[in-house]
Amino acid sequence: MLALLGLAAAAAFWLQPGRARDEGQPLSQTRLLEGQVEYLQGQLEALQEENQRLSQLLAKLENRPPADPPNSPPFDAVGLSLKFMQLRQLPAVPMPCRSVPMAKLESLILAWLQARLPAATAQARMQAWQAMGWVEQAANPLPLQAALLARSLGGWYQPQEQSLWIAQDSSGSIDPSLACALAPQLRQLATPSAAQPASSDLLMAQLGTLLGDAAYCRNRLELEQPQALPQTALPLEDPDHPFNSVEAPHLLREFTLQPMLWGLRRAQRIQEQGGWPALNASSLHAPGSCARLRDWPLSSAPSLVASPPPAGLRSTSQDQLGALTLNCLLRTEISDADADALSRGWIDDRLSLHPSDQDLPQACWRVQLQSPAQAAACAKAAARIILRRPQGHLLREADKRQEFQIGTRHAAVCWQESPPLLIWAEGAQAAFVNQALPATGTGQR
Image 1 (cartoon, rainbow, N blue to C red):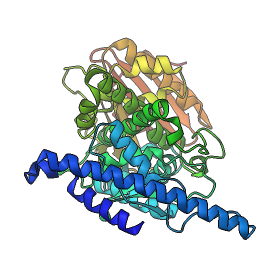
Image 2 (spheres, one colour):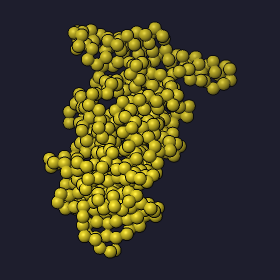
Image 3 (tube, rainbow, N blue to C red):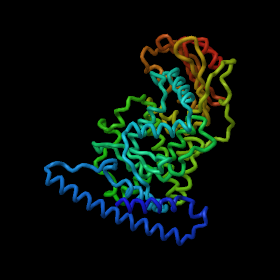
Image 4 (cartoon, rainbow, N blue to C red):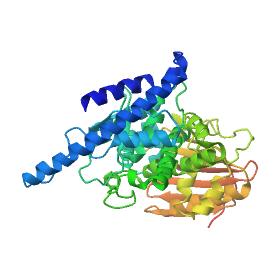
């Protein structure tokens, strides 16, 4: 069996994407190697079946349950990866698989995230979320996101070993088929590009492209070859799934699941229009915004929120959250259909973090939309989010503006008609909130 694996690994080296083209290898030689790979894979599967039969026989003679081989996934991850490559009409290159502890898999995914988003930048974003009242603690989100991804995917590509790491899961509740579907694309994206994501919107667009691609391929394989997928895995919404054991804010969970769902729609649309070659090509080039995952038309209007807030307020960081974040927040108060309709009008946004002499910093979120009606509806939903928080109550309201107090903190929401903007600010000082929002008339409730 080791000899077969060695030959398969050698064939995998020569069949790496682009190798035949770059080194002038004849196409006939490539086809020959593909045939040898398929033959070796068949022999390997036969040996695995025979090994399993003998293992079960030995366990029966010793009156004990059969054990999985050490350092080996409890299912044929190599074979499943090959099935996904064949489904996508890619060269059937066997990928070595290795079973690792969950903590080791989390570290691998965390390194991938940190290569695209420095920890200090991620920390500043969570501080802004905390200032807006969206999370309780401003912990570094990347380790939590890595833990969520590890449990939802069940594996990740290891570029140094050129292998697929599969999480050890004795319960069988994690479905690693998404990782098997994702591995061919991750192999080509092992090294981040020079132009690294500069915003949450861009990072989620890249994740959504990859995860949605894998989810679509898994769905297609389930329709065509349902017996090829693990049968004991639990759905992510099951309370007993390890994904739900991670103590992470609700919004961060949404940032793990929603990009996958949005990306799945994109993958389905592209594959239906251009076939597998179109999907294989597009999966390596994420769109510049999550709005493009949904194929929503982007307005050509210039951004009016890219500069810092008015009145000379000093900001320590700015972030573009994107249509997906707006959608996630809206869905906490309105229906999914209404949230989609409003998010579709997103043009641009900036969440800015501002220093404060209090324990919590101050923040302002400005969202540019396509119509005044969308701005007004978003402001109404934002007000409901604030009022739902403990000790949140309305202080005063005027035309297009509402002011709130949440314990000792102050918040305000307003919207504008021309240009259509939602402005939402919160801080320890009422003066900051008044500076962050445009001047309007005041009126008592």
